Length: 111
Image (cartoon, rainbow, N blue to C red):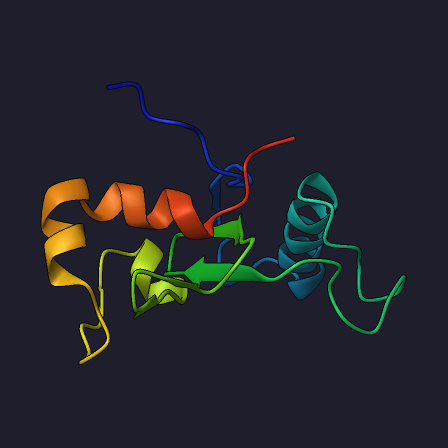
């Protein structure tokens, strides 16, 4: 079964801590532009919901079309592999379809 793509701006390496903060801001603004989110200077709120994942070395921006699917609320941790299972979560759906199918349901398609 082919995997359908999701709108993820290219992951990029975070500039070293010694680099100016403007370098990190520039990368964030490029992600925002790539995903059609608008920059903070263009609009007070993003044009679309998104998740931003960081670690010490890289970051990734994922544009979402919705937050919930099959009783799961997907935030940035969901795209990092952590799913919170609550009373409303459809565990049978997740077991049969898999976690990538869940992420594809909430993430926007590229383009």
